[in-house]
Image (cartoon, rainbow, N blue to C red; front, side, top):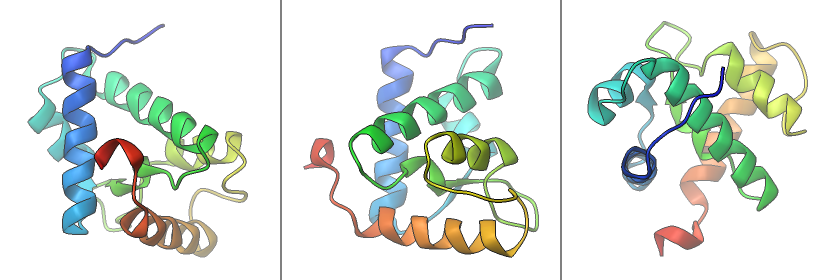
Length: 121
């Protein structure tokens, strides 16, 4: 199934992530879904958009902004699909749960916080 996101929703997603980055905060999938008001299937649309953004960031050799989006659960990590995507992009290698994933994610978040994205300038 192909999932598309409108330009308005894409711009809103980028703005939400830019705000989170500037404030040095992580944002949950649920909070993003509520703020963006994506049409059904909202979670699939958000996932596809975050994976597309990760691919754009990887191609530009930038830290993955999608790492700022996490699950509400106790792990406070992105969903498994994020790590699978990062692995496809040759950014991460290993199991998507456990210490290696948590450590890599924490380092990537710091890189995102410290990076100056050209389109935010």
